[in-house]
Length: 315
Image 1 (cartoon, rainbow, N blue to C red):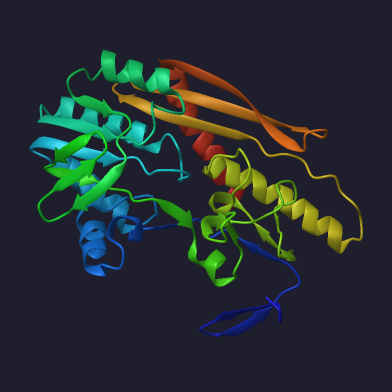
Image 2 (spheres, helix red, strand yellow):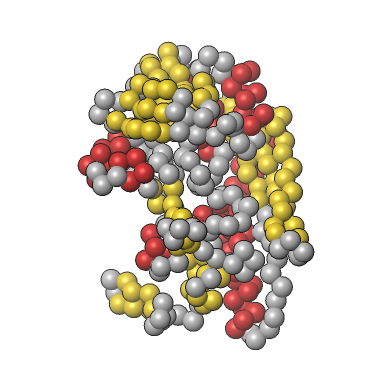
């Protein structure tokens, strides 16, 4: 950062401003310490599928080929990418099991006290559509994972599994660590997430670097695709204004998150969140609006939202 250079295999690129949005990385050391072989076995055989690519194809194949038994989903502790994802996955996997007459259960191991966000909507789907197929286990913090014996030990008991979607804790993506922009706690230990200004997204250690998307901390923003898109636009305006020598009052992002809970008919639930900044308290307050009543209209809106995001980013 001192030289304002980004090094690549083709040489270095100099910058005036740098925006880092590398997403997440998995923290398997929280489960296995320095045992890289156990981490490799777990990621290879039971991929989290939070990072795009082959992991998603592997998870899809697992679901399609599952014959019977218990399929476990672990909810990461603390901050993680796409908070509703484990619960949405459980619903959609249960739909496939029900459709294919699979003699199996989907067991959600959650360190939290209850499903969040959109808890009532997910619970209604589990109880009304997939009763006996989805089992939700709260207060199930992971104590030990054995990918060979297929056993997970938690604070809510021990669970054997036939197959699984195992996600360890998440952290900010590798580039933030390389740039030495990870926040530290009161004891000086890394929090795992970026340290940035809550309004401008500038790194507190370097005003020429901006941090966007899943990597950030210290703000009530979920780590979602919609949120990252919204933050990116805010940062673009701030940089353009600085280049033009103009002052700009940063705006706040917004968030929308649809979750599918049924496959036939295709039904979804949704949360929309706007944010307000309390100048006196120097605090950002969320103003959520949740629709927990699943509907086909929201199912259609899910696809419409996705198409609008893709057009906005790539068209």
